[in-house]
Image (cartoon, rainbow, N blue to C red; front, side, top):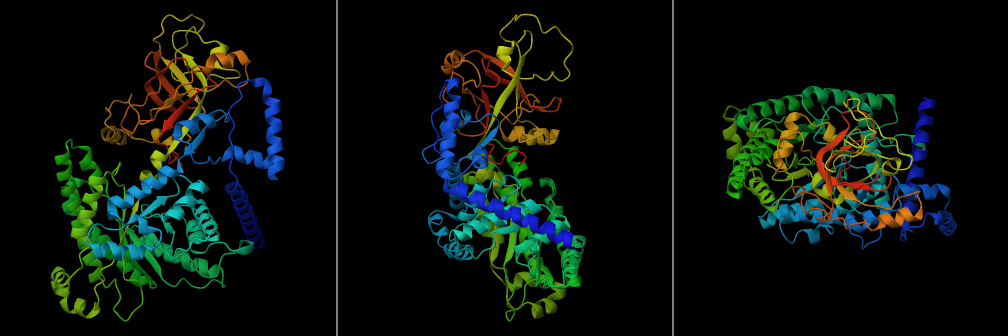
Amino acid sequence: RMANIQRAAAVQEELNTYSLRKEEERRKKLKFKKYNESSNDNNNNSDEKEDNDDDSGGGEEEEEEKELVSVLPSGYDVPLALSTLSSTRTRVFLLLDLASIISSHRMFIRYTAGTGVYSRLHKHSASHMRRLIHSRRKGVFVQPEFTLGKNRDLELVQLLVRLGVRLRCNCVEDVRIARLAIQLEKKRGMNKEEEMLVDDAGRARKPDGYLRRLLYPLKKKGRACHSAEYKGEITVDGGEEVHRIMSAIRRFEKSNTKQASTEHVRFLLCLPMLPSHQTDKMYGIWSHLVSSVHEATVQEGGCSIVGVSVDLQPWITELAHVGGKEEEMKSNTTALEAICTQLRHVRILLLSLNLYPSKDKTENNAMRIDFTNLPYPLSKSRAESLTCALSTIVSPPVTMEELLASHPTETMTVGENITVLPNTIVYTADVSEHLVSHAGALCTRIIGLRREGYSTTKEEQGVGCVIPPLPNDDDQDMNTTAVTTGGKTHYYIDDGCYGSLVSNFSKSDDDEKSSCQSCNLTSSKKQMAFQPLPLYGPRVGVEETKVEETSHHRVPLTFPSTSQDTATTSPPNKPTTTTTVWGPTCDGLDKVCESMTLPNDLEANRDWLVFPDMGCGGGG
């Protein structure tokens, strides 16, 4: 027991140190200077850095932290920020545009709730906004949520907390980062009554260690608090999961006698996803799961089921097979009507099972409906179709006649148990991709290159660069001279499918086909999701003449307006070549993209490849 206390104290001390360090970093703004092309001034640059450290009261450790996290002042756009940071960095980094995240959040609220709502969002609570939108009889208020597994950057998480976006947690690290961000924002004067930390509704069967930290956060000296502070819902996928979680909670309370028992555990049922052509079987499966979870909560006592989580993948599948706008609107109506109709039946079923208390009880009467896998990108027409279906099918109050008609054999029982029919529904949605995806760019450094058909010298490869062998490449004489300029080039970057670009490696054939259809790409395996953009940079660690010779190659970096556009930054007359991009490993599976058209004058240890729309960080 003493060993556990000591380990918990060490974790708490590390958390406090991390909090103080990040608090100091936020107060300071880095001033970037124009890159000095002469490599002979490196000593002067290092002296300037030491002087800056002395003036700011920091040291070598603080300078190392600045290399990890840099906050640019306002006035920087994405191309300018990438050009500035690439001249000061030597390895891969992720750029996030916080202003773009705020704009995406404003757009999502306006699309779902209507115009004139976003200006009042920061002054009122979420419950007040729901009542306001309900009184206008137009649109619904969908509470946005962000999955921390996508990106755990503290600056990003703090911004999301200020915007009122709830944080979805899946592991102990997610809980730690979320509580730290909420604590820092409360010190800055944030007053929010809602629970900003929630359990991820899109995934069930989480480990007991995560549940312990979610329900009983660490306090001073590494000890858990005596009472459960988490008042949100815990996701389950059936009655067996309810029994397991309640057994774990009793074990937590038994191991520490000072911990008070959990008042009331609220469960959220994660409904299984069914294909769009099997919507007629949807209600039978869903009703059986709701009944089994309700029966488990009655057996355990001290818990209840308060809502469901629905996957909108059938809607996305319908959208992927339509072409024109008229067909898309019809598909929206067909797919959403089936899902929302079944949600209406589930709502009536929860009422008939005596989920909600009578008027003399003080428990919360609101029902929560969570949505995952929203269509991407979420256009205004799609958002209006979703809100219209919710407001006309799911949200209308359930009448007593409708409730009794669904259960004619239990008319007396239902009439006696339910005296008040609640009309409040809380809608939540995972909008991680919509908020952050277009706000970031992953800038990877080219660490090696290899051209098929002709040799490469050390000057072309880069100083100190080790070229890994080509996967599945036959032995061939690489000492021959170049015969053509249209050969295939292989670029090796310092990040790959085992790192931030893991989403490209984990795709199956079906996922790749659906992704190609949604992105207006062909189903050929040569077309992949990642389309890098070239970024020229000055060579580091070579003579001054070499830098001057390559300085004229810098071209403005332009990003496509949407993810469907073809990305290119090379001038019209610049020669190009067919390129395959590999990760830093020697694994043949570490292929980032192939058959890409990129300039053939990119050099190792100088130039970069930028992957736009990577705000979620790929694999987190």
